[in-house]
View 1 (cartoon, helix red, strand yellow):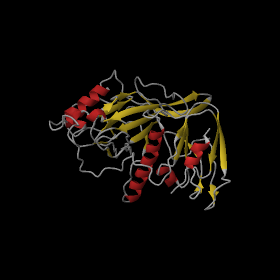
View 2 (view 1 turned 30 degrees about the vertical axis):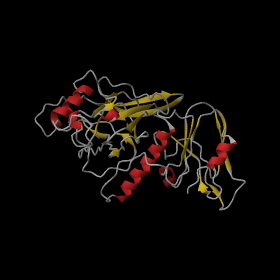
View 3 (view 1 turned 30 degrees about the horizontal axis):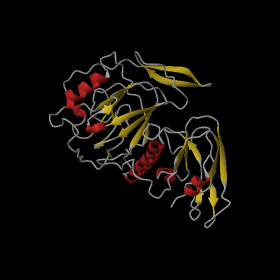
View 4 (view 1 turned 90 degrees about the vertical axis):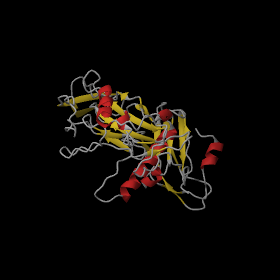
Length: 361
C-alpha cells in the first residue's frame, strides 16, 4: 500500500482531468489484458483538492501487474503507466523497461501517422510471424534447404486453461506449449560494451514469451530477416509475410538507462534477426531464435552465412561511431515529458488507485 507521503508526491490537485486505470501486459503495455481490470474514466473537476475518486484492486499474489491509462492511448504512449511487483531496476521486466516499451509504442505510432498512406511503420511491440520457406538469395552461395513444415492443430493446456492452436511443425521443433499464460521475458542485449553483437546470439523461446531487446550503445536495430538472406529485411511478396523492425535505436555515450523494444513469440518456428546498420550484419551481428542447432540451419551457420554473403573489411568493431544514412526512429528511452512519473510498487495486499494519481500536465 502507498504510504501517505508517497501519495502526496504523486497527486497534483490542480491538474486532475479524466483518467483511467486499465490492466495491460508487459508484451503490450498500451493494450488491455484479456480479463484484466478497468476502472473506467474517473473525471475530476478543475480545482478540486479533496474527495478524489478511488478505484481499488486486491493483490492476491506476487505476480507482476501492469497498468496504463486508456483511452486516449496517447497517455500511455507518453509514459503514463504503473506497475506492481515488477522486476528490479535493470532486469528485463523492470518498471523502466515497461515504461520504455509504452513510449516506444507511441514513437512507432507517431512515425506511422506521419508516413505516406502506402507505407506502414513497425509497431513497438510486434508479434513475430513464423519464418516461411526462404526465397533464393541473389548470390551463387549454396544455402542449406529449409526444413519441411507441416501444419498441425493441437490442444494446449496451461494453468487450467485449454485452447486449440494451429502452427507450423518442423523437425526437432518443440511443442507449442507456453511456459505460462503470460509467458517468460527473455532479455537480449544489443551492442553491449560497444560490440557488434546480440547477447545471447541464440535464444530458445516458447509461444507467448516476450523477447526484450535492450539497446546499450551506438545506433542499432533488431530487424527480422530470413536464413537465406540474413542481412535483408523479410518482405515476402509471394506469402505477404513482412518481418518486424525496431527501427534505429540511438543511445548517447555514457547513458545509464537504455531503450528497449519487445517482440512476442507466437510459435516455435525459427526467427532470424540482424542489425541493419551499415556493415553490422556482415560483421556477424545477428540473432537466431528457435533455430534447430542440430541442423545445417543452426545459429552458427546463420552468422557464418551473414558474413559470407555480406561481410566487409570495413567494420571490425563498434568502437567507431555508427552513422546511419537513415533517420533514426525516436529513442524508446525518451523521458516521460509531460507525465508525472508513476513509480513501481512491490507489495501484497490492498491498493487504492487515486483519481488523478498520474495526471497529465
